[in-house]
Image 1 (cartoon, chains in turn green, yellow):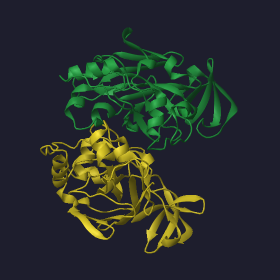
Image 2: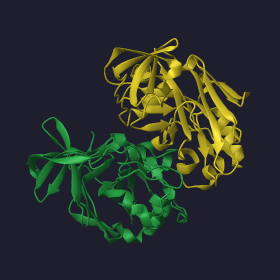
Image 3: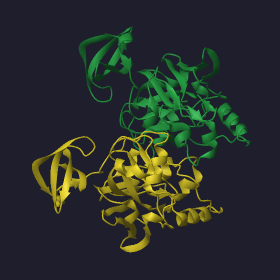
Image 4: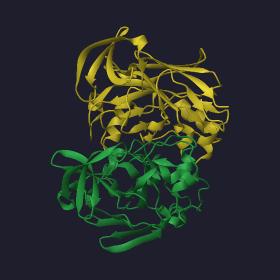
Length: 260
Length: 260
């Protein structure tokens, strides 16, 4: 099942995508919903960020080659994390599929993509085992954890490096019923493949993160967990189009616009 | 003006506190509101967290003596931050005035309070000057940034050290029309004063934080910015009552309960 959140005229609704059609629903996949008789063509509606999360979690460094690459860039020895400690991102930075990533004037050239799988929590959970963790996931979507590397190295926190307005593209929709360990991520920059990896090569998988987090905190419907990226990343120039493709989900596409 | 969010029976509403009475409103201070004829005694209603923030910001280390104390605890030289880089906390951890702080079984003894002033954003803002920053603040409330210091030192992020469920008491209400630099914070643990400071001694004030943050990000109505604490902090034992008092606002009171 494929869930989207969309705008049609002034009205914002959730919808179920079937082929090229969107069936508008009353309610949401996080509460209750009922299909309506309103059916739109997918092309005619504006897709929105598929959920505004109550809490926006991010695994951060969670793939071995990315950890190694990031450490070398800082002139340090790579140090693989030994447990699934989760971080945070911020809702102000969220944009939808096809919306522009707007880079502030004072950013350096080192504005880079990070293509990631995103788990969307469907049901409240606390203290769940790895075996039952996916029962609490509604489905999966795609994220681009855009990062300004100079700010990332120099600031005390990741606030503007990762959470400048428009730095968190997420979408285009949420797909249910997937096993994350079957998925493959491919990142292209203006048509050129710049990264590719299997989700199963993560240091800690979705089941581990959810189970570990839920030992201390309650996850709520709509919370998202961005699962981290693999490999080296490159700078994005003005006008570049970044696409993150995840098998069985789709493509998240955003153009980069540098403010003058 | 004194705003609260409260529950009466099953209904959750915003209210205006006048003396010992709560005037129930329709709407909220962040949108539009209208006073209703429903008036309750303040004692008879259950106060809730005064706002669930879209994004939950925290200044983190923002007072000189606290920075020095925290660095010495880690065996490092104190290093005062040179700019107002903001961090994040998480909504799962929020609890209201008079609700218990519940410490998980596997926490160490080093569970400590941090008494803080909290700025509540009232209007959407981007790129505002320090001079106009307070125009975008609805008012101020009180926060207790409860922290498990062993986890804070050992984990890669602050996720469970600071965001375990119940580790973020906030309230009891929001007071408008205050100048933060006039305010005084006093922290007591089971009746003993354990910390006291003037908000104006912060490295970076509310105006600076909001102005700096708004250069890169949009602040939204209901966002909160916790302003950090001053001084050393102590362990809280099972049964301790921690009170954070801020002049012209009130007292945020929470009991500590250790899970067995």
